[in-house]
Amino acid sequence: MLSVSGLCKRYGARTILDALSLTVEPGSVVAILGESGAGKSTLLNLVAGLEVADSGRVALAGVDLATLDDDARTRLRCRSIGFVFQAFHIVGHLSALENTLLPLVLQGVGARERDQRAAAMLAAVGLGQRLQAMPRELSGGELQRVAIARALVHRPALVLADEPTGNLDPDTAQSVLALLIANARAAQAATILVTHSIAAARSADRVLRLERGALVAGDVGPDARP
Image 1 (cartoon, rainbow, N blue to C red):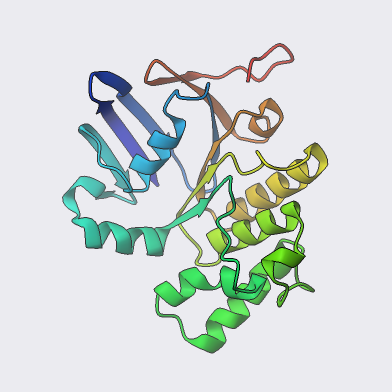
Image 2 (cartoon, rainbow, N blue to C red; image 1 turned 30 degrees about the vertical axis):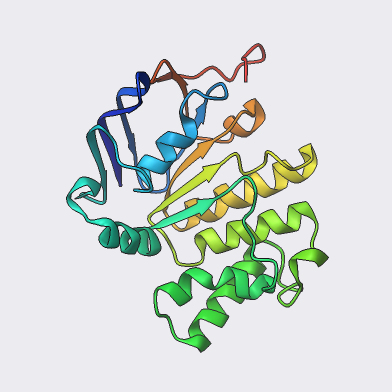
């Protein structure tokens, strides 16, 4: 589903990613660990087409992002990528239902179908009774559940999760992460989970660490460093 090869990214004289390669299959969850500043968020931005690599190739379902212009990359993101942000990025004046259906609005899905799909997705993450709740009425865990529902509602081929449990207490984090992974797997979405959490990484099928611009096998044993 996702193929990254020879990816390089520099900011001035600093090399962030150096000939990085990665493959993620449908329904598979890959966790990426790494210290702050290692380039984890940069990698997600390149995979999503939000930034452009200096060299290398990012292909989603066989489509090379480098061959697309800005508008085409935007359409690809709307259609094929779900992004879960650490800071939630929930729109404050919209209800849980309205926040969740935003990707469907961008795809031009009709009002009745998008309401039904958004309601079903919120029910799947345990918020079926909170459809009309406003963000100010929701807890941190509930806000992150809305963010997960929004990321998955349009059935993306690729889910990118950037520290999705970073702002949550341990019990809520475990519950939210389980929901994200279960729903992504059910949809056969390829999933990349960027995290500092060893506990979160243990939920993945494969664990990698970003070091010196490259991905290496990650350690999630009892003595593993975050």
